[in-house]
Length: 260
Image (cartoon, rainbow, N blue to C red):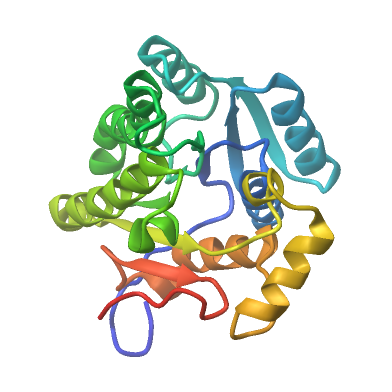
């Protein structure tokens, strides 16, 4: 309890956190940061090689993590991962819905099936995960959800209609969950990253080109890095953020400003 008499719940060493897309840039940074904080981590990823590497890095740094193979486009795979994660660690304190796909094509050229798969992985899967773990969070009357959105949710995305739509939906999901579960002391916020040194922007640029683009375009003069976003996630888990829910927080060097 603080001096003002308010009890502010936050992450405690030993809490269990689920991270989807744990083998990628943001996901790996989340896992490493949470591991250093003393979390028990369920590292979900479709790539066994990348996910297992993340777990190795967490363990080498003294943290605790277990890899779970998950295909977020498959409801059965999600259910199996939920059951296995719960069996390993119990009820989670936090869920980080980080994983997403970004197929690139114009609206006319994008097959409807590809659009539907993007929504299935990027927005239906996070809803499914929250639906599965929600009773645990509600029963323990504490928890944090962090959904990873994108500046594309605010600006749109040429040749990325499915991704942009799904990330806009993530912001709406965040607000809805925050409103429904606030009375259970479960908070839900979204992070809106900008141009970062991660796999998606590097599909169309070299690291040097990406750095130069950030220097020329971004007000703070550089691109973002996974560690930047991991720092924000750590704050959102903490008791310092205990009065914060339903927000989409941009971390993008000032490149895309969230409407007020």
